Image (cartoon, rainbow, N blue to C red; front, side, top):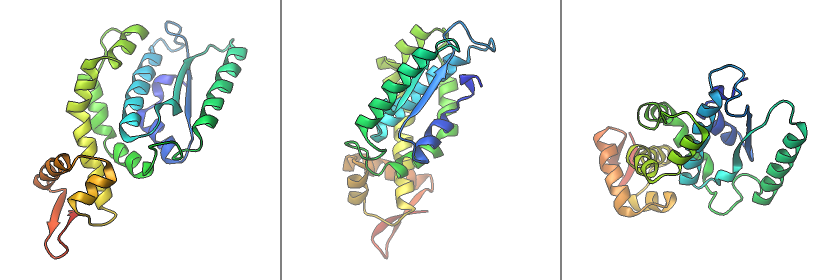
Length: 210
């Protein structure tokens, strides 16, 4: 199967299902078997997924992509040994520093996948399809700015709504649980309330999912 078929949803679903790591092996750039250069799409997806992983506190080293041809059996073995070693050092999913409450955060990201894919196609697509151009863009300040502008706030709101569907909470409890500044939580709650996603329950004096 072409690595271009490896959807962002597949990567996140693997972690939701408990995988400690995900490895993608693709054709070398310029040697795509299907003439679609799908490996460049896979590379973009990996960069975007790693950014999302880092944002929610999931170590991005748990996701790896390498170019390996069918004739490079020894290299494949070496790469997999190295990746396995790295995963053993990281430990089981959720045990590394900062990897707490991951399932809820991953589910919040998953709910945003249709929107994220739209943003990727409309605003994050690299026009020059080379490995160097894709790597340069996703490591740039421009990408960080666009990510914060277009995705980070919506992701925070998605996490808040997912959290509130479990039980009603105060703004302070939301801030503590998600590791957000109280002022950020207030801003996100205001937007969420106007969108009909959350509401304030006067009887409980808590915020609930609408």
